Image (cartoon, rainbow, N blue to C red; front, side):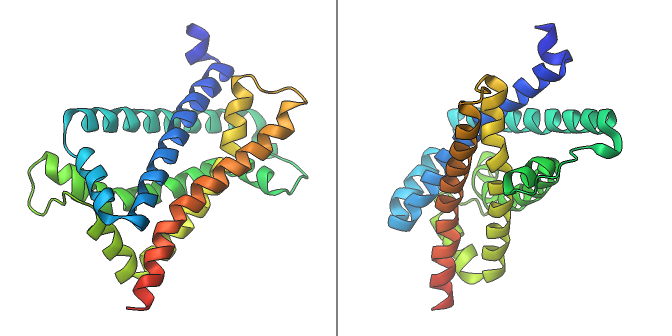
Length: 222
């Protein structure tokens, strides 16, 4: 187990596994959000089921732990790579979209963290956190909160779409990179993983974008 924490390969493996875990969460969250477009009542039922109960709190802690691990190891590996490569860090003549994402993963990660802070403030704080601490103004069903944010404030719709775009770029590299680190790195699978990574990232972000776009458009015609 020593190599897992004290070698570059081990750190990449930990970051990849935590990244795959976060991707699975994104798939769940995107599907949950999509429910709101079809039924506010069903969405509120899901939110209430994921309220301040023991399994939701445990899930939140596990998710937060996975996110912290992913960020910590990404920072560690980025600093390690820059120290090793110096001025030639990520030097490449390839200007493709995926290569751009690969060279700017940490910057994209910082943008994602800032967007996540806004997201947690707008939703998680007003729902699970306030309910957990019995604070005034806790929201049990989140449909009104989500609809109100995007339909009443077009700026938030644009902010969320920009945030989702950054996540998409991050995932176009992250999905196939994680699979490559795990072991799917031969000549046959490498190009396939890039395609799969782009498809997965695009599907996740389109599903996420449906909610702000849909209610943002509704807000314009109020």
